[in-house]
Length: 121
Image 1 (cartoon, rainbow, N blue to C red):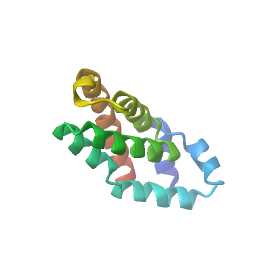
Image 2: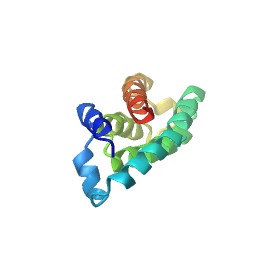
Image 3: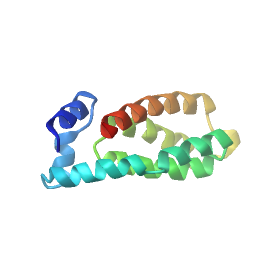
Image 4: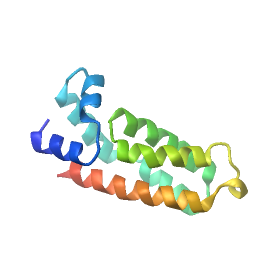
């Protein structure tokens, strides 16, 4: 793994050491999965589902993105998407707290974009 990327990930709140531990110290494997994260469609699916008011589908995308971001140690992404997952879990459209969803969505959007910029460079 490039040392500059590693440092930037750490500076932006990623749990690089914990993730490397899960990857048994294999920095090349970690880098490979970070690059795959760029192509992951769960974020886009989540945003599209939220925009369309399909909260059941949004929950599925949020839950998957939560797992992926947690496994990669992208804690600033994982935290708001975890909150979104819980806000959407088992809720009908009329039960969803759309104000809280908007707050967590904004936090997720900011963190996701930041990490995509880091990973993309």
